[in-house]
Image (cartoon, rainbow, N blue to C red; front, side, top):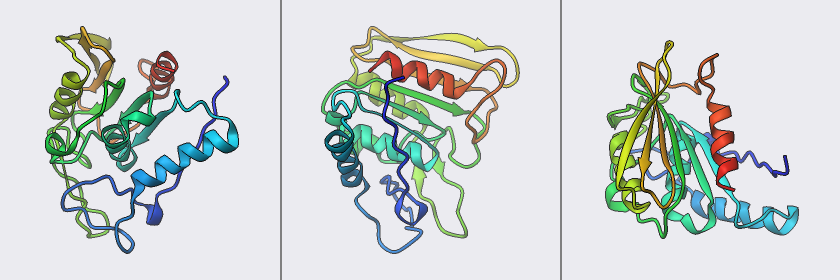
Length: 207
């Protein structure tokens, strides 16, 4: 389809996504924002990627890292897709995007690993994994940055789990949230809703 795809690995298996109270799994935290900037630069220089059409997507810790990238390196991105991860607890204070950016979020309301309503992330091997902001706070930030005037709610899938699309209206850049009622920490894929299909549609629309 004319895309170049990179699958970066986090150092020590854990992205430094900026969560307060998060213990590094291995050694000291690293500058993963700089790493992603370098990855983009090399993709442009060595593989011919278009620097104006860069999308980033992630799940869980990867989603939280993608959320940090959206805040800290907005200038390098064309769209962002987050699944089961929205932002750190202090997101309102630290997220200062330089311009509007299309954002898509898929999140289960019963996620017990990264709580939908915010709070403490489930521990990993006895280590504290920090705290996250509520999904509504992340959406409010981006609706403000993107200049949305309101939002609308549209049922997408009536079967279990039920999925509702919450979309900002009047926005300069899309803010789209697929709210999975009773869904857990999961990349949802079933006959009525498929996260990959929706992510591909979103990224393709904003390329």
